Amino acid sequence: MSNNNSWQKVRFDEICKNVSKRVDNPQESEYEKFVGLEHLDTLEPKIMRYGSTNDVTSSMTLFKNKQILFGRRNWYLRRVAIADFDGLCSGDIYVLEPIDNKIKKDFLPLLMHSDEFFEKNLMFAHGSMSTRVKWKDIAPLEFLIPSIEQQENILSITHKIDHAIYNVQNLLEKTKNYEISRRESLLTRGIGHTKFKKVQGMFGKEIEIPEEWIIEKLSQVCKIYESNNISSDLYIGLEHIEQGTGKLLARGNNADFISTKHVFQKGNVLYGKLRPLLKKVWITNENGFCSTDILSIQPNKKISVTILSFILLSTNFLSYAVSTSAGTKMPRTNWTDMKEYKICLPPIPEQQQITLILSNIDKQITRQKSHLTNLKVLRKSVLNSRLTKEKVIAQ
Image (cartoon, rainbow, N blue to C red; front, side):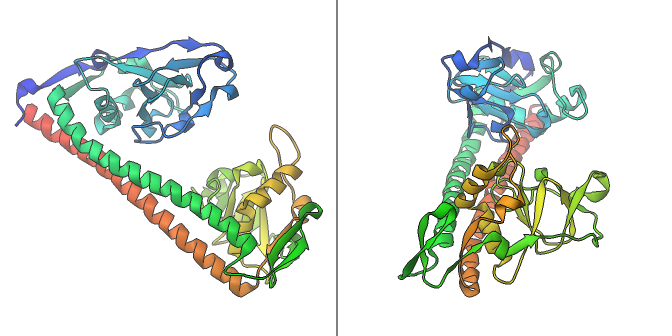
């Protein structure tokens, strides 16, 4: 049972300090790893990925192992994580050092992920399009925190959930990699074939495909969809399509985009021709409009819409799209080059079988993502309920 003396009210700058040491030439520094805002995930207490300082030209902030990284820009995304290596980070990230005997290192991110920390920061956010919080504003914020012993008890619970989260994340990553390798194999070797024939692929290269398959140019199995007879509120831009998955992240409203745009109908495949390395592909499920940086492709009876999308996501097509793209800073592929791409085409029944196999793997990924989300929600819920319960007792 808690008592009034086991909790104490503290200012934020009494439990941690803002450490800011600039490194002017990241590429010439002794540090190899770079962490930007894009490397910090919402409500994720660990840094799951990072970039290279070789790709950074402007000055950055130094952080050390066990320090806390807090994304101060768009802070409402709750991007707070403990570093488990030394490196450099963006100036939009605060580097925080927990103060000994006041708060456990692992507990500080939990406090900063809490609803209380979020609500108190609401009063001091600056900006409209890209909000930031400033150290001078958050430093004097007051919080009621438990004793070190109680912090350890709360951490023992959240660490168990974190372990489950790590296992699911690891499984999810393996399943995604398996999906990619299985897709590449099915699109070139098919299902259970024992007899193969040699044919001429791209750039005159001789390849082997199953005997029942044929080689076709992309223009022989699909075309660019062109029509003006569309009425829809839906608008899709590159930002709405998830990278490399064939899925939609969000939807736009056509009335909000007055610039030139293309049309598409249900059953088309949208392909992002700008920066092909992003692998932006989506099968449309209704009529709508899309950015001019997107091609709306209509398959014919020779190929299923799902197989066409798998081909546009494949490693072989990506290599071709990159090699034929124009431009350096913002490379762009075009239909003139794309339509010459040669695909290995199975009969329709086998296309359906390939689709079923890959769809089942995708369902596994969806279930794993859902489980991961539920675990993160549970972690947040346990933390907030435990803190709230203990505070009521303490007060």
